[in-house]
Amino acid sequence: MSAAAGAVIDARSGQAARREHILDAAEACFVRNGFHRTTMQDLAREASMSPGNIYRYFDAKEAVVLGLAERDRERGAVLVEAMERAGDKRAVLMAILGRFFHDITREAAVLRLDLWAEATRNPAIAALVEQGDEEGRTWLIEMFEAIKTSPACDPATLFDAIAPLMKGIIVSRALAPDYDASPAVAQLHALIDAGLSGSLPRADAETGR
Image (cartoon, rainbow, N blue to C red):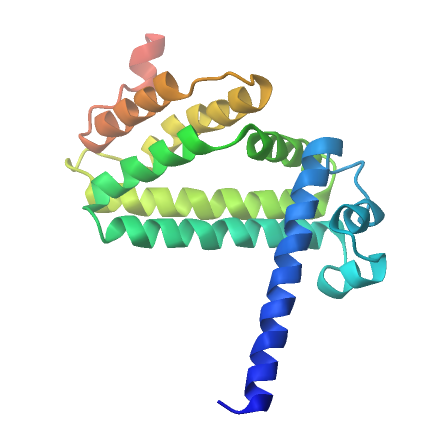
């Protein structure tokens, strides 16, 4: 490798490290102060960088949130790839859901809750949240379709059944420091098992209509 090529690689590595540092600082600020109250100057102070340097990487708070979302997607993709090498798709799905909802930190849950709230008044954040939700929905529906054990399974209906429970786990984790997700995760797994086998309770049966 030439000295020039090595210098370019080092520069890119340095830029990537600074970007990660800014994202870590942003996450800390958003959790501590909320997205709405956090300014780019706050991010600069948290990262021990000048505001001008922050703007070299992110031109607005919304861009920082997009960076956080992209980082989460990349980490999720790495996790899925690693688990797929170790087991079948059904086992992978259950392991990923169990690991995510058991391991999510209170800080991450608080940040998610704050962004949901901000999405009600900030169109840019609403678009980012909607995109992330749609990507998650698409991935789960495709996974349900691939592993269903009965033709009676409707992947979209199954997703609609578990979505409120998944959001509820995150809300509970954010609001209760000592929250134990185990019972809710067990219920989530049971709902998925029922849905994949085509035995998910029908809404009209539950309401008596």
